[in-house]
Structure formats: structure tokens, C-alpha cells
Amino acid sequence: MSATPAELDPPAAPAAAVPVRPWGRWGLRGVAVIYLGLMIVLPLSALLGEGLGGGPAAFWRDVTSPLALAALRLTLGAAVVMTAINTLMGTLTAYVLVRYRFPGRGLLNGLVDLPFAVPTLVTGIMLVMLYGPQRALGAWLAARGLEVIFAPPGIVLALLFVTYPFVVRAVQPVLEEIDQAQEEAAATLGASQWATFLQVILPAIAPAMITGALLSFARALGEFGSLVIVAGNIPGRTLTAPVYIYGEVESQHQRGASAMSILLLALSFGLMLFVDWLQQRKGGARVTG
Image 1: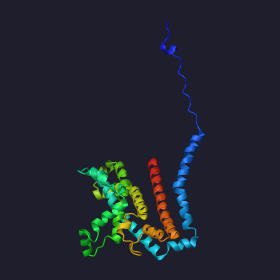
Image 2 (image 1 turned 180 degrees about the horizontal axis):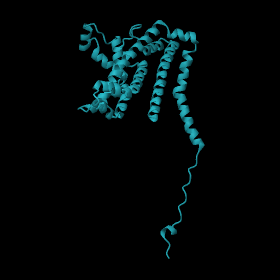
Image 3 (image 1 turned 180 degrees about the vertical axis):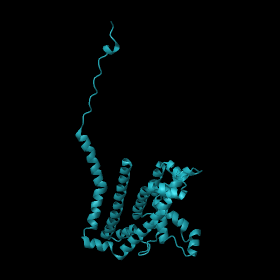
Image 4 (image 1 turned 120 degrees about the vertical axis):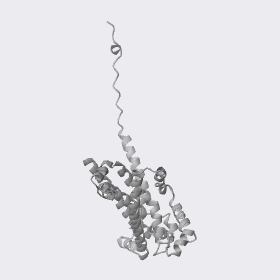
């Protein structure tokens, strides 16, 4: 009786286990930690050392001087106004992109990300070309008592442009995940479109709206390129905090520039931590549900 092919062929040797090299894992971790230290920790340490080098009293004097306070108030006020507008309009844009199909929808969806690609200095130049006092639209507005460039409205417009994508891109994927059967059920029960939005859609997208709003606000705190063009940088009137920092550096007042930088950094980093907490909480709620 002849042997079968399975009996003639010797059994395959088990695959050799890949040796674990601890030095490989620790080497990768070491490279990542060293890079993080060089890129973030080292510059941050230098900033903290300069800004806090004179002690808490000197730091407090630097961030509460009249010019510093005026610049900080203007920055925070413009950021709040911008955030309120962008939260509303960004949510509306996301809703239109998700719920409707129309010619040019793909182009509109691509234009949403344009502020990420345009250098902020170019943003400032575009606004000056449109709303400058020597331009038709700017002169028309100025004749009616509304100054845009070299005034607070220009600051808000610049911030609206550079932060526009944040709320749209935060809300859009959440809207796409909402089951439209819930909206149809609400309509079947007699709910109006507005009532359906308030009772069904808004609770689902509210965390994403808050996330986008906080990201927009944090981004606005550090905006420099467009504002140095459109604000006019008048101390006490149109001088924002980032441009104030630049002026302090130019005046060789490194400690004052570092103190204001630390304050803006603390505000932005605190917002980023809150956004991360919101996202983790939303993810945990999905898993639980």
C-alpha cells in the first residue's frame, strides 16, 4: 500500500518566535521622549524661567499693566464674539453639508478647510484689500460710521476667517452618525422642524458644538499673522495680546513678553485639557450606551 503525500512530507516546523528585544522598545520610547523634550519641554522651561524669573510680584505687575490688561481684554472680548458667531454659523454650515444635496456642495465642503491652507498674513491682506478705507466697500462703510480695518470689527472678521473650520469639522461627523429615523418619527408625531432640531438633533451635537467652540476660542487667543495687518495695533484700542507680546520683544522687554505668553499659554492649554476631557466623556458615553 503506497504512502499518501501527507505521510511522505515531513511535518512543517513551527515558526520561530520573533525574539523580543527590550532595547528596541526602550530605544523608541527614548527617541520619542527626547524629541518631546527638545521640541516642547525645553522651550517651555525657558519661557517659564524668563516670565517667572522676577518672582510672582513681578509677573503680576507685567500682566496687569494698563497696556497688557487692555490688550488682554480686547483679545478675550473679540474671541468671545467670534466664538458665538462661529458656533452658530459653523453648526448651520455643517447641517447644510450633511442634510442637503445641491450643485457645488463638494466645492463648499472643500472651501471650509481653506483657512487651514491660507497663511494668516494673507488673510490679513485679503481683508485689507476688501475693507480698507481706500477700497470701495471700506469707504462705503466708513461713510456710514462703520470702521472695519484698524478697528475691533476687523479683528473679529480676521478671527472668524481663521477659525471657521473648527466648529464645522467637529459637528459634521456627529450629524452624519445621527439616525434620521428619529427625526422622521418626531415628524410623524407632529413635531415641527424647529422642534425636531431642538429635541432630537441639538442634544446629540451639543458636545461637538462645545468642542469646536472651545478649539476656536483657544486658536483665537494666539492669532498674530492676520491681526498684525488688520488691527492697526493702537495701544489701548486695537492692540491684541499676541501683537503686544511682539511689541514687548521688539522693545527688549523679554520678561513682559514672557509673562503675557505664559498667561495665554495657560488659558489655551486649560481649554485643550477641557476639550480632551469632553471627548473622552463623549466616547465613554457611547461605549456605555
